[in-house]
Image 1 (cartoon, rainbow, N blue to C red):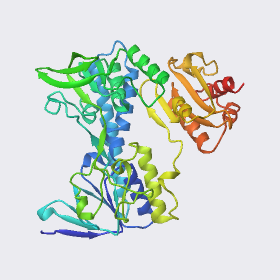
Image 2 (spheres, rainbow, N blue to C red):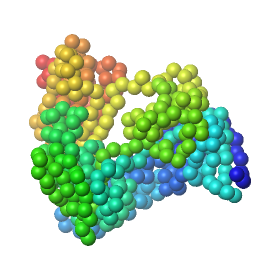
Image 3 (cartoon, rainbow, N blue to C red):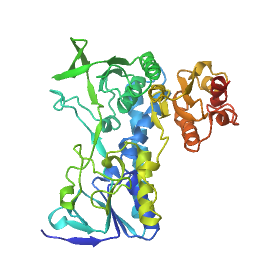
Image 4 (cartoon, one colour):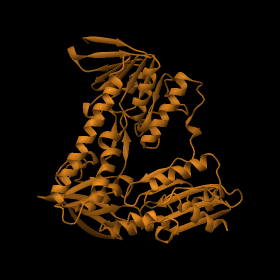
Length: 461
């Protein structure tokens, strides 16, 4: 093996995701020598600013501004161009923010372990080895293509990444899976003018949510013209020129739907193939995730795994919190663990968004808790005029309150600004702020948060 360059550093980070780049920046600012390896120049900054959160939510914004008189194809192409410009700027900013530091270096290439402390990048004369006493792995996750006959070979198969970058608006989009990713893309493309069908294998959408919330979501989606078919088991995909024929079974009968674009949205898996983790003695789970303890240490205590690659919740803000835990190990007291997390919110960015935190009503009742349930349609909340000012009164707000302690156990907010309100609710839950205190708080007007005044007042009377 011919080695052109051999580097040593204090911290080696593999992957430019949220957790990795945050830890790298803080460590570099603390005077540690940091090398970060990213396999693609198109992914500086990680999934979120390049092919995930930022482009999809920007497309949600563009789609909601489309007018009836706008040409669908031209408007879509203009929107994607706007997305490309923003993600390009973010990518350059992420690179410079790290590589511009005196103690940090970014290497572009595919990394692979050669021993527990050394990673190699490149081949032959371009080979670089980097050795470090501490290594952070932050390589993220990738979409899973389900083993449906004909799907992987279909010429109409598209990934979520491709959908955020292509400037050709598909005429008919079929989404396999009614989870967060699938429903977000369904909403985006329907508003751009695409005919959209969602095929979900479960008997209903969002099985982890209460049935009334899931029904409200489906009512909004179908009201927007999205065809939602639950209990649909896809059995085959057949290409037929300009379209694919998707064959599915429902209630013992066989049905078909045609697609000019076919998006599998049935989950993601950790990206560890090619890392040669066995050479480092790092243990992985059957799905490829790096097995970690509550401090995010792998089977090799000096190798940490942050973000999707460790098999945890696949959200950018979880990767960020992973960085805090690791930084606490490396720069502080080492007390932070994953068990410290509570009341972590989630948002499904349909229109209006669905934001949730804590227990559902069914979960609380299953635990035998003494609860009160506050539920109100957004259109009926008098103290929420913002919904009317922005002409979005669809949805429902639901809170689960402990009758004995007055503490909030959970919330499901399907409403305008839900992605913001849920952060206030989650913060209240973490710090034991009661429903009464939220009800009696002073909020700006007109705002969506002031709905808390009214909805808690009804359940606390």
